[in-house]
Structure formats: C-alpha cells, structure tokens
Amino acid sequence: MNNAQDTEAKIYQSHYLTAFQRKLLQKSLEQDLHESYRQRIQIMLLADQGKSQTEICQTLGCCAATVRHWMHIARSGMAHQWQDCPIGRPKAVNDEYLDRLKELINQSPRDYGYSFQRWTVNWLNKHLAKELGIEVSNPHLQRLLKEMGLSTIPTRRKVNSPNGRENDGHSILISDLKSANNSESNSFWLFNPSNMA
Image (cartoon, rainbow, N blue to C red; front, side, top):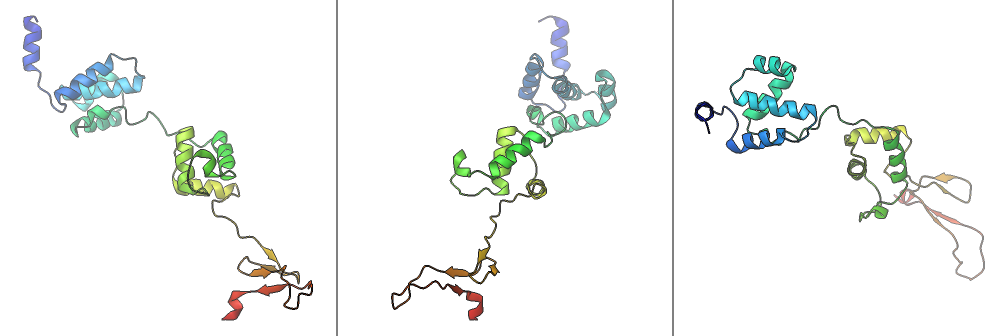
C-alpha cells in the first residue's frame, strides 16, 4: 500500500454502512448489473462517503427522490437488501394471466398438488403469482373474476319440483320411494324444512 492509499484508508469514515455492507456493495458493483441496480449501489456508497443529496444527483445524473430513497435505505441499515425491491412498475395483468385464471377456476386445485377441493381467491392469487410472477391484491382478483362472470363460490343448483316450480336449493326433493303398500307410485314428495316452522 502506498502513502496516498494508506492516508485515504485512515481518513475514510463510514457515515451509514457497516464494513460488511460496504464490501458487499463494492463487490456487487463488479458484477454485470442492470443500470438501475448499479445506480442504487453507487448512491449508497456515495452517501456513506458523506456526499450530499445534491452532489449525488449531479454526479450520477438521477433525480432527488431516487437519491433520497436510497440514502434512507443506507441510513436504516438495510443497504444489503438493495436488490429486494424490483425495478420499475409491478407487472400488470395481461391476457395470459386472464386465460390462465379461467383455466384454473375450472380445474380442481388437487390437479396442482393442493389438498383442498375448491379454489379460494387467496390460493388462486398465490398460485398465479408463483406461476406467472404477477401479484395482485385479493380484492382485485375478486373483481377480475366477477368481470369474467366467474366465482370461487359454488353456485346453488336449482331444483325442479314435480309441479314445475323451481326451488332455490334449500328444499329437498324426495323421489324414487316406494309406498308402504309396495305399489308403484309416480308421485313425488316435496319436503321444505322452512315450512315446518
């Protein structure tokens, strides 16, 4: 080590980063990174050297909000998590997502290794996020299902009674019973528990 480097090493005082974080960030800069990731690292290293927000903006040619955000990350001790925040806007729902949603809703979750019989919005969301990498909120997925005329809630079947009336699924239709005198009867009994109260 020459005198200039030795003096620089003694003078350098970290403002935000631990020695581990600084080395990790410097080593990461050696990799082939997306420009936005590279910029994040440079912001945190410059902030650690004591550079102001304005100086960093001028040096790197980026906006103040970006510098402010990554300076805050460095200050909070989370500099080692620089790649945890994905770059850019989250992926939006596309036709592939909607088509896959239609397929899944009409298939059993058991076909995909799950133990339950019917999809819930939460599990559909988790499965699609894992499969396609697109994450949406559960209420948004519920809205998408509704717009497509689909639902995770099973529909009640309408039951036709022998007199032609439709029942709402709460009634029990009793048929195919033999009468007590063993004679064949073509009549049906309609049992509605709500009428018993």
